[in-house]
Length: 157
Image (cartoon, rainbow, N blue to C red; front, side, top):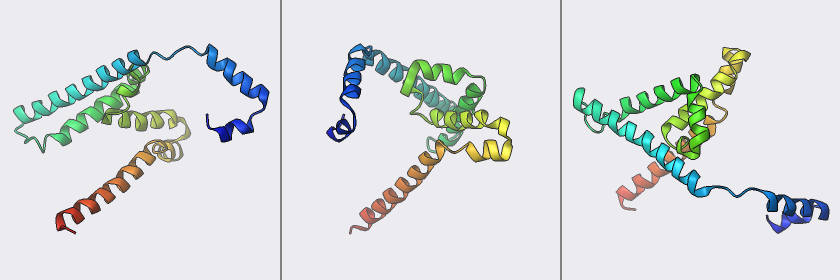
């Protein structure tokens, strides 16, 4: 904890924080890392298998097979979210389900499901992008700056 924040607490609060830290169970980091790696890797293997499927049976190129692959992964994620399965997997796997595109689809679908009782316009429409909106904004802004850097780099300035 930063020294500035410690100055705001009373001695009793600082003692309680030290006491709570002593009795906090240790985090099983190796187990969490392993689960995240296995599930995130499995999602990526499924995506790669889908891409190979589209390239082999539908004559997509490696470049054009990415769009239907992403669409199928998003559809499966939303379907599993709707049935409540994705959340159970996410509780077990942690960040392994949050990093791939399926985690982004899950965050949007979860917000839509959670607020559907408030109506489609004010509930779903008004709340669907609360979590995902920041991801979209930062993604677009980052892509903009990367595009400018790439353009300047190619021009040789």
